[in-house]
Length: 163
Ligand SMILES: [Zn+2]
Ligand SMILES: [Zn+2]
Image 1 (tube, helix red, strand yellow):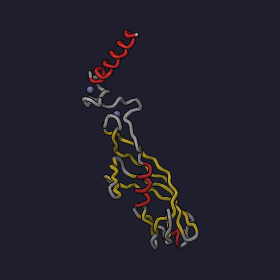
Image 2 (cartoon, helix red, strand yellow; image 1 turned 90 degrees about the horizontal axis):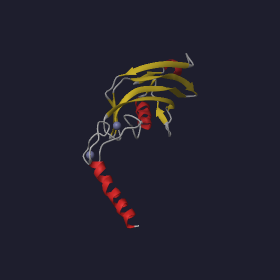
Image 3 (cartoon, protein in one colour; image 1 turned 30 degrees about the vertical axis):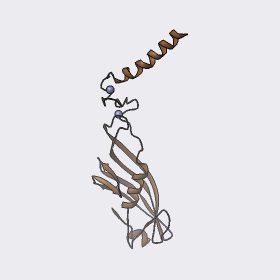
């Protein structure tokens, strides 16, 4: 995922627009893995800032995730805006710059990881799975929950009787 910055370095141009389509099945960082179900579209503009390069743009893709309640697989669209600095100097939040190009890979992976949703739902009102029998409650109703409620109702009834 390299971006050629020769023209910027040689000051032939002030800014370089780019649009990349990257086909990957997944992005990986240590034990973090994101499954991609559509190409990574990375668009933006690179500009020279002193000796550094500032890249500003957007990353679009869809990731495969799972509903936090019913565990059904969910396609989750990501649309990330970023602005990052690339430099030959090292520092916090600075990505490395080579002689005539920059490698966007780490920057893209970082941004996708940061935007990775902690909790995805297949739909806003997903009923989830029954904690007793595992039935998908979006598809039907089991008897487990009724049984769980009944004893409490019984207790209430006898409470009122006792008064
Ligand atoms: Zn769900
Ligand atoms: Zn059940």
